[in-house]
Length: 209
Image 1: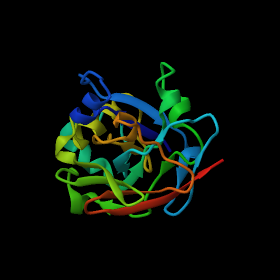
Image 2: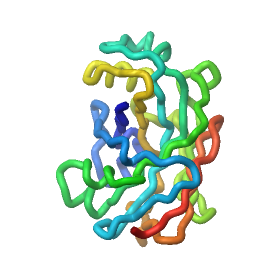
Image 3: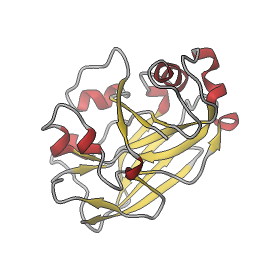
Image 4: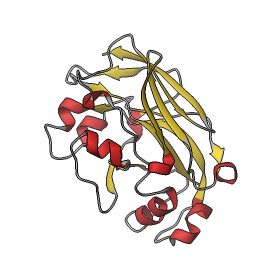
């Protein structure tokens, strides 16, 4: 399977990081080693001095395809999950690409719940929240996506042949710890929750390696 991630897909998140708005989706990837389930620990490696969670709506592909027309995109989606794109910011902003910063073991918690596209349609109008130790850190809505789900599925399929089980993480709303003053990093002993309206809550403890 492929874990295809979209960066800077909420305008306010791009702004809080001082980044220009993308004119096309910014694509990066994670590998399967990053995947963990609900209740499993996010492990902070010693190289990471600042680690953020990113609350995201994840799209799961149900029917494969290549160069999918946007009007047919939802026919290729089986449903939606809750995802957490964990990021080592000190590494991310010291390198020109993000594979290492976002690729550590356990850096992609994913919910067990898969809510079918028949219930959530294009995934619009869904509240996306991150709570760290019970405090709301991120609070956004998928209506604010720069590139929506049908566009992303079609666009990505022009690059990669999509296959059943592939995931597209659609981006994160504003409020991440790196953009706060003072900065807020996850620590050993924390618990992070990501909630997407209509799907559920993904909860994971945080431990130091």
